[in-house]
Image (cartoon, rainbow, N blue to C red):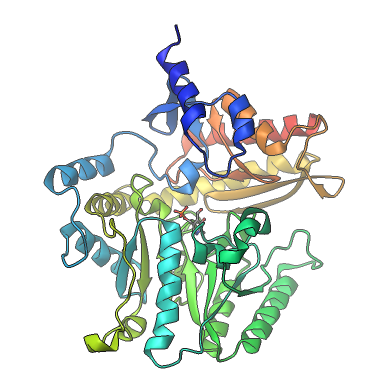
Length: 449
Ligand SMILES: Cc1ncc(COP(=O)(O)O)c(C=O)c1O
């Protein structure tokens, strides 16, 4: 007779379609069914424990299980499980909006969505309609950065286009102009300074080409993560922000993955001296406990949507679960915990520890580049000058890392040939040490294989 645990694993293989997964391979591999979270560990139905080394797709802050965020969600569920923002307001969404506006300098209004991709959709629609509402409908093109990622819905795929991922969906996508991103590794430049100058020059050329037609430039704030952990050089984002002003183009900053301390700053765009017109937040907003995202903007954009009803200037966007009270209650509790535990200070210390440990990777032959900021690092693996996609034994590096890390009791995912260090934001001490040790061991093993 089969045990309940093998039942779950089999049923998963029979019924569930996993994201970004070659299901033919999944069917052949051992799948782990997670049933519980305990602090920074996930526990499967065979009682095996895995350190959460991906922050559950980059969104977890405090680890898993019971804490004040869960309490706040439970209280909210008991009081009001959901009440729509269509025609009504709800208390947690009001409280959260007030907190976010206080937190985000220059931002005055909060529009809620359910996930990062839809926060980006809302941002693009907001930008497009802004220009129509003020009588400049010719401003309808968008610009973004090469290698950017903004989500998997149609607008988000258009601006964050990755050929390998989205080639099949191209017929759905809008035409977007792209500027180069400031990645020194593999470029023709010797210094960040020269590279930054080149990128800004190209960005300005592209903006000039679209002059009078560009609705907005969208980019990740502080760093690209999905595109390969590209940390922006100093002043780069500030200068892009200045260029957007010069060319009368809205700056849309996607801080979904990089905000709330991932790069060591609570509000990354502020630390970068940049001034977004529209800002997208998500992931760590609810500590990773509830799907909720937000698109913020300032009074000038918001004001363009105010007019007599018949002018039809209202913002036509909204989801069933927009401003979900449980998600908003989770976010309010989460932000309170940031202050209570002085999380940014902890992040500062832990980031120093990561920096120090990263020097150990330099001796490994297949490590070609190491990039780091805050609670994010990317370790680029290459052999003979080429990205290390397959090991000498033929195994794909991403499969090797997934399999070996689980066997070591850690859950990790690579971005192509890049090992990514992206722990839950409050992880430190022994757990962070174990995470760094695991990466080191994996890199050394991959070098031999
Ligand atoms: C920068 C950025 N924007 C948008 C998204 C999309 O967010 P979601 O997966 O919640 O739709 C992601 C997801 O990884 C992201 O990294």
